[in-house]
Image 1 (tube, helix red, strand yellow):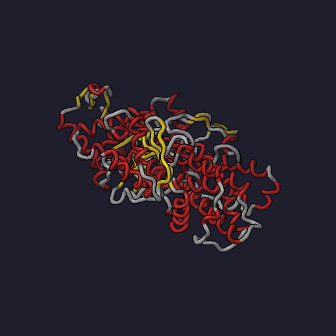
Image 2 (cartoon, rainbow, N blue to C red):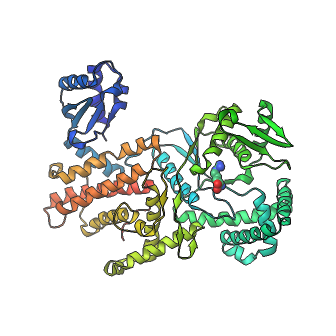
Image 3 (cartoon, rainbow, N blue to C red):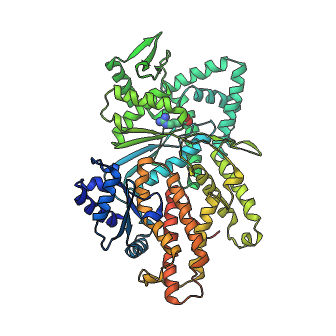
Length: 563
Ligand code: ARG
C-alpha cells in the first residue's frame, strides 16, 4: 500500500543524494513517532560522507512536495515525509475490498521452496510444552512463508526410533491392552512406557531385553517391526485428529525410523572425509576444534543416534524436496545439537549445507492442571476449553445467545493458547497461565476474537449493501485515519516479518488494529446515520474486519464471526 509513496520518496531522494534508488528504498522506515510523519529515512543508512544531520536538513529543504508526498521535515539525522492521506485512504480501502483474504500477501518467494520440521513429538512420551511451542510457532512460520509466495513442505519428524521403542515393545508384552490401544494409543502407550520404565529401574535385565529388541528392529526383523509399526500408525492417526483441531496439516509424517539410505550415505561421507575416530569400536565425530565437543555417530553395538539420523535425514530431505531453505523449529535446549548438525553438513561439503536454520524458542513453565501435569496435546486443549467455558458462563446473558457454546469455547481456547505462546519474542520463557490467557482483557486470544466477532456482528446488524464506491471524503475523523494507517501497513508486516520470523510482530499488529477499532466505535456510528455516511463507515469496518481476520489466520487462529 505504501509502495508508491516509498517510490516517490526514493526517486527524488536518490536524485538529490546521488545514492542508488534501491538503497534509498531499503532505508525507508516508519518514523518512531507517528506525529513526525508517515515515512522516515535515517541518513546514516544511506552510507554517504558528511554530517548526517546537516545532510538531512539540506535534502529535506530541496525536496519538492507533490501529489503523493505533501510535507517533509528533519529531526537530527532523520528525514520525515508526510504522505497524501486521501490517496492512501482510497487505495487501501479499495484494495482490501478487492483482495479480501489475499490482502497483504506478496509473491517474493515465488519459485522457492521452504521445508520446516516442526511439532515432531516422540511416540510413547509426553507431548511436552516444547512440542506445543514448536507446533504453534512452526505453523505460523509456514503460514507466513505461504503469504510471501513460497512453496512450503510441513514435515513432522516423529521420535519413533531408538532403544526406548524396544523397551516399549517389551512393556507392551507385559502391560499392553488391545482395546485401550485402539481407543487412545498415545495415552495407553505412555502408560505402558511409564510402567516398564519403573520395572526396568528395579530390574536391569529389562534394559538388556529392550536393547536386544531394538537391535532386532535395526536389523529389519519383520516381527519386531510389525508391532512397532502398529504403535506408530495408531499414534499418527490420533495426532492428525488433534492437529486438525488446531487447523494444522502436515504434508509428511516422517520420523527417525524412516531414515535409511541417507544415513548410509552420511556415514560413508564421514569416513571418506576422515573426520571421525574409532574409540573402542564406537565411531565418534570430533568437533572440539569448533568448540562443539564430541558427538557419537555410531555406538559400539552398531546402532545409530539422534545426530546420525538427523545427518541422514538432511541428505534425504534435500534429495526429495530440493529445498531452498530448511527450518528446524526446536527449543533452545537443542542449540548444541543443531550446531553440531550444521557443522557436520558443512564438513561433509554437502552443497546445500548453508540452507539450514534452527529456529529456537524459550521454555514454558507451570503447565499443570488440577489433574496433574499436562502431558498430551489433547489434554492441553481440553483443559483450556473447560476453563474457557467457565469464563464464558459467567456472562449469562451473552452465553445464552451462543449457538454452540462448546465449539466456540474450544475455538477461543485454542486462540488463547496460541496468542499466549506468540505474544512475546520467541526466545523468552513464559508461564502457562490459565487465568491470564483466557481473559477477555489484555493481550489475549479471547480479546482478539471478541474484536473480530464484534466487527462481524455490525455487518449482521446493518444489512446494508455497500461497495468500494463510497464518498471517501466522508471518512474524515482521526479514528478513521488511524485505522486506515494501520491497514495500509499490513503488507509491510507480512514482508518484514520474514527477516525475523517473530510472530509477536503480528500479534502486536492485531492488537493495535483491535484497539484502533475499539476507539472508533465510540465516535463513528453506523446505525441511524445518513445512508452515505453509513455506507462509508461500513466499508471502513468491513476492511478492518478483513485485515484483522487475515492477521489472525496468519497466526493460526480461526476467526470467529459470533461469540
Ligand atoms: N523429537 C525431537 C524431540 O522431541 C524433536 C525433533 C526435532 N527435529 C529434528 N530433526 N531433530 O526432542
